[in-house]
Amino acid sequence: MTITNNALSGALAAQAALNAVSQNIANAQTKGYTRQGVLLVATASDASANSPGNGVQIGSLLRFSDSYKSQQMWRAASDLGQRSQVQPYLSQLETVMSADKSSISYGVDNFFKALNAAGVDPTSTPLRQQVITAADSMSQQFNSIYNLTANQLISVQQQQTAILPSLNESLSGIAALNQQIVSLGATGTNTSALLDKREQLIDSVASQVAVEVINNPDGTASVSLKSGQPLVVSNLAANLNYVSTSGASTLTLTFANTSFKLDDTKVGGQLGGLGDFRDNTLKPLQKSISEIAEQMSQKINDTLTSGFKSDGTAGVAMLSFNPTSATGLLQVASGFLTTDLAFSSDGTPGDSGNLQKLVDVKGQPINLTSIGSVLLGDADTQIVGKLGISSQQNQSQLKTATTIRSQAEDDWKSTSGVNTDEEAINLVEFQNMYQANMKVIAVANTLFDSTLQMFG
Image 1 (cartoon, rainbow, N blue to C red):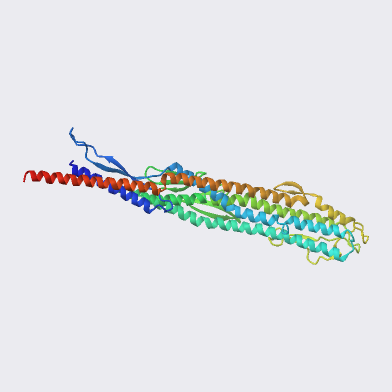
Image 2: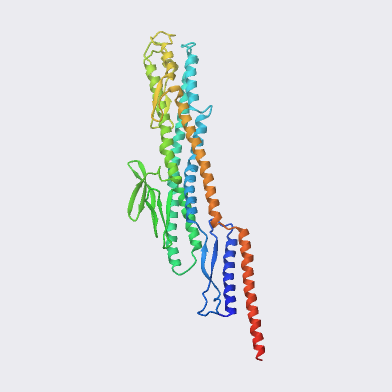
């Protein structure tokens, strides 16, 4: 090959490299963009001892990507999604249940304080009315907090359902991109932009559920759950939805006409975080509140019905427990009057024997499924303390997940991100390369013209 053709190949190679540099600089701020470059390869020489070579050619277009770093970033996205989704719920519960004026403990303490105050004069109508008023206030605090847990349960279920359309759309997008990448790759077309788009969709899916990704030799990416169920294989995508059976909703994955029932507390990501919070924190908390209300009301009612009113008649129940109502879990019985308070143990007016038994109820044990045996007066403090520990643990894990995700992104950028300083250096180098080759062409032309003049 002549000196002119050698220089021309160098100029064309430099031009291709400059095109890659310009693309990188143009996308320096594009989220998820993976920088590109060219691999220059010397062209083999002719079968001659005097031939230095036949110039340069572009061996391939490079895409600077590290599969390991991408996997680390997706795993970090799953952990971050799992922790970030539940913290607002935990913080709300912790704030409301530990507040001085809105806690269940505050209502219970005031009720028993009113009972103690009534001991000064068991026949006093104002003191008796204070007991009923305190009981009603305590009931409202039970109902308010129980209703908060019920509303959170509805919100969690709605949030889980709202995640699925976006998740399914991303899975379909990955499958469609798999097909495009294989099709265009077969024609030699650069598929870097399609690969970037696919990796962004995988990152979105990873934040919603924990995934495993395998890059196949044909250019496709296979995505599956950590437990092994397929989400995307080649151009086929799974579909996830909640199926209601006998009043219970089950997360179901359908792939190629095959259905898998999933435990949504173990799928990871946002969906798994919400499921885990619902089953392992919110529902046990809700049940504990209901158990406190039920056992306390039973003990108080049993004590009242075993005593006597001021007129000597048997006492009646004061509290009504209704586990089917979120806003009426605990209530003062309809029509209950101050004269219905059975403070006497023998029917004698002014006797406070049964009143003392009512006061003693606060120090009696009750049994909670989530904690075990605990004194009634300490029950709310115990469940709030357990909730606080869960919240603090999640906050700590959230901070860790945020840090790990940030580090994973930085690691990814160190390989795949655009460094404008580096691109500026490349720009100058390939510009010099282009100009040098054009200078060689100019020299070749001068030599050719001089040779022609010799024969002129």
